[in-house]
Amino acid sequence: MKYSEAVKPISYLKTHASEVIRNVSENQKTLIITHNGEAKVVLQDVKVYEKTQESIALLKILALSGKELKKGNYKTLEKSFEDQRSRINDFKRGQREIQS
Image 1 (tube, rainbow, N blue to C red):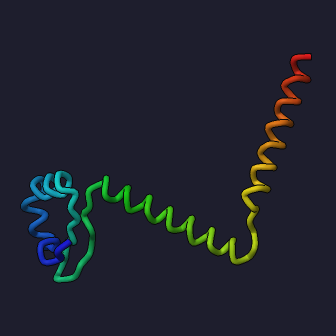
Image 2 (image 1 turned 45 degrees about the vertical axis):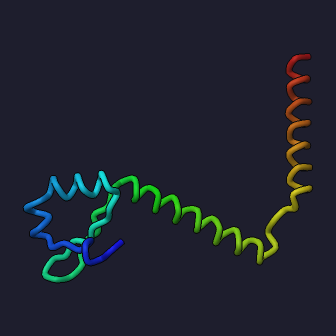
Image 3 (image 1 turned 120 degrees about the vertical axis):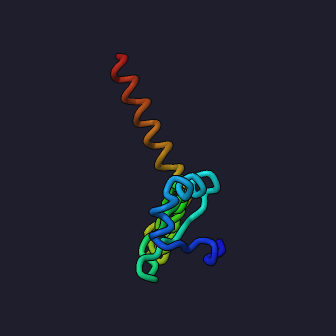
């Protein structure tokens, strides 16, 4: 993103609102709106915003996973599959008991 093209004063937004919204939406652009020469808000296409939020959520999950690995709070793949097989077998036993 070129910031020289992405920064607009609030007066521009006021006079060209529908054009700005259409441009941001159609081109999935992000605009920085200034007020009194200072950056105040970001105007962003909702799809871009959603992708950004999803990326942040994934990064948080990765960071938490890394912390848990360092603490030793994890199961091996073999143990995970063993636990799942056990749960499936328990469920099947319960289903047989219901049918009896």
